[in-house]
Every structure is written in structure tokens, then in C-alpha cells.
Image (cartoon, rainbow, N blue to C red; front, side, top):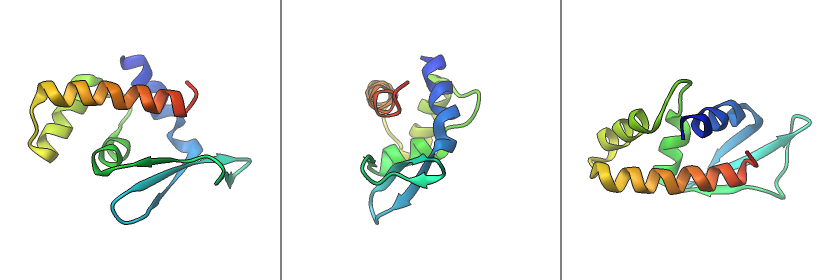
Length: 94
């Protein structure tokens, strides 16, 4: 899973984020222009993960960051994180 996290991290520069209040939109850039035909809507937790994803992160470091921010159960966070990363992986076409 660490490879997937790194691939997502490397793709971050190819996306622009727009805050719509309680959600964050991930919009792909194509030739330095936002492609509004495709976007992914992230809730508060998803936006936190996207914003705090750093080079070298793995599942354990992301779970620790999330648990610290949201005071959540580690087991549930890990399960939710894995599902979220798979959704991101699919959207980013990794």
C-alpha cells in the first residue's frame, strides 16, 4: 500500500483543489488548464488526508495523523483509509 500512497503523492501536482465549504473538489489539470469535466468531491476527512499526504507516508503514519486530528478508532480509520486510497487510486488512474 505504501507504493500506492507514494503514487498518489506524486500525482498531487497534477490536480488543483477548490474548497466549496464543507467539501474539497479535486480537479485534474490538463495542459495547465483545469478540466471541469472530471472531478472528485472529498469530505472533511478525505480533504484532510489529501492535504496532509507527504512524501514517505505509509498507512501507519496516515492513520496516526487522522486519529490525532479526528480522535477516531485506529482500526476503523485503517479500514476507511484503505477504501479511500483505493477510490483515489481509481480516480487518479494509477
